[in-house]
Length: 131
Image (cartoon, rainbow, N blue to C red; front, side):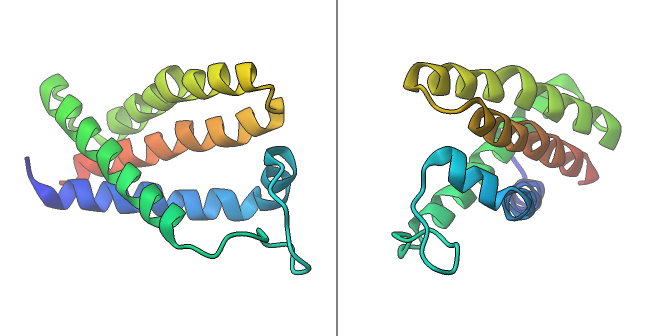
């Protein structure tokens, strides 16, 4: 399994998440119940561990999608994008909706996190066929 497309796709998905959560940071913090400090940033976030975990997770998603795309012969950006979109919308987002529903989490949180899972997977899927 070539490493370059996995790293590039994983980084692209991770970077998309940085943009996504920058746009939705305030509604996400409200919906998730994260306490904020005077600057509006998470009050207890001192560790870089969540960023490391999210990067590793994006790489795992990219590697898994690369393997699936190779088996399914998905070789165009368009098919990669739509396949990734389907993976996010039909696999990842429903799992989030299920667990958030049982946990009593706000539906807005499901939409924000499920949206990232959906569109982040689409970004990863679009990058994989570039290699």
